[in-house]
Image (cartoon, rainbow, N blue to C red; front, top):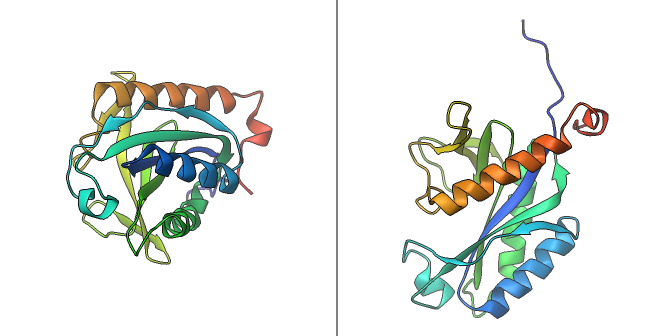
Length: 186
């Protein structure tokens, strides 16, 4: 029988899709308010590779930013966090259309996990209509995150792999033996 262990805390991040700078500004303010106030890192904006959300978000060229939060979370909080980001999306909507799409997830030393409201073969049900997927895996051999079968194309961009790998390094330093008494979930 395996021993039940308390999971270590993880680094929360959000991938935010948007069109206008005013919308990302409003989303960031809401995210900071909801998840601890301090942003550890904010990626540069880049064009998103799909037109899937263009009509709803109201532009032809949707942008994406990754936001990494300073406060660590327990991985079991992911479903509740996704519900909160859905509430933020709704609060920023206009005439029933979202102005931002917020995809929360977390980084562990071994993987990047995303939350979703959509079921698919590679997703595991959490609770309250929320699923989780391991979208990138850490390769010890390559010393970086590597794509999974269903990884979104923007996660596979070299600049984003580098950012996520750097954020993993930050997480690792925060989970060092000296900080471990404070790194476990309750």
